[in-house]
Picture (cartoon, one colour):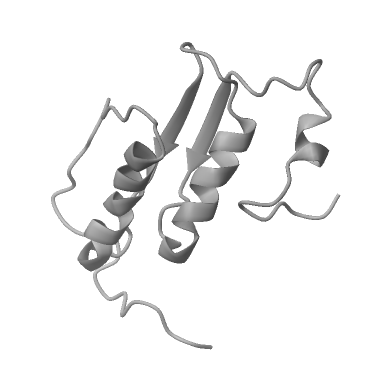
Length: 108
């Protein structure tokens, strides 16, 4: 199966469920760095998460580019705007950046 594009139809993914009501839990890990795709990512969560008060989408991320942290965090504002309840459950602040010499986005 080819990869899934955020925001695309979910029929290929949902066919693995016993019914088509959605997933109880979604885990989103290290996806927020791609700021231009936040809206599509939210759309995918809307399409795949079961419409239930017990369903959860857990979002884990590290701001690898600390100067873009506000853009990473903007995802959560979009999620609220889309009707999701957002709750921070854990945060660990590091003593220093992970990659001190990272110049940011560059072309190879």
